[in-house]
Length: 224
Length: 240
Image 1 (tube, rainbow over the protein chains, first blue to last red):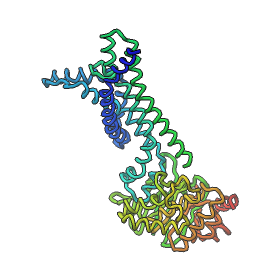
Image 2: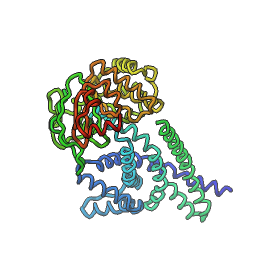
Image 3: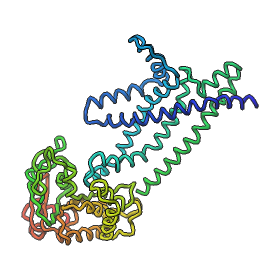
């Protein structure tokens, strides 16, 4: 039995790295995603096009490939241009690549949220003399935010799990901890059971929270 | 006060308005009637530029509003709008719905805006609903709150886009009563409506629209009792 506890303990020792990457990546993802969402709704066609391509590329390639490009590819590219660059810490590269990756998904979440707000809300706001920015700020965005909150929390859960692939670029997070221990002790079964347990201990409470948010939203919809 | 000259509006190939010229004087109450798809709502929505006219001119207080360099937000403050579907802001209480624009757009101090809002709520009979959210109001109450919200910006003109069409029949009366109070206060009003009895009772003038044109217009007793145009006769024979 002890060996199973050890497996969990080992996996848990990577939790701070996993959480750190996820939290910062989501923050970057939301900030970038907002810019991408607004740009994708721009009235200027080339801007729309550029950001549509941005989203397509990021959603159409695996995160592990993006991580390899960021961690190994980018320094090499810079070196061919004579810039001596390497990542001090793979965690920085990880946060960046996860944040950029997440921004593509978050952008779509935000865009659908803004578009889900009834058109009449914007018309009512404008008819009351508000300009476009005031109408967005006071009327549209607060309503959109409530709509997208569950989806954003889901994105956080998805990203948390996806950070496991960062072990490929030598980030010692939850999965990597277990891999190292399994390799040293040959205790593969307790090791990876522990890994799964650690991920579940975060994702289950979070998905309960999402379900609660969705229930509450459905209620306020019913009484509309 | 409102002057519309040769107004046209197309959505793609569909011509919704085909050259409308009309003047609404101060304190005049004008009802616009006609079959669905005749362009009544589009005509009303063009007046505060929720729809941008394809061609023609619109003047408010002698100033053309549909040209470049006009601050449309400033013009819209003179024009209150009431929608068929109320369009109250669901994330705000009734009071906040009414005060948001005075506070944010006119920079009215909050205390003063709330005081004025309470007076408006009293006028529409909703003083006890100030702190509830629109979700818990009935249709008639929602529409009365929406009228109070539009009035909070102290408009010179009120535009009503089928204000009772989305209401249960027993709630139509309370909304029409609030509108009658406004008529008695001398408000300039343009009302798109299917309530023929109401149109006949309150309006100074009735416009009958069909296929994007004002086919016939006149005092309500002329239009309702003795319509001249064949299409007006046909329409009224079906709805009266």
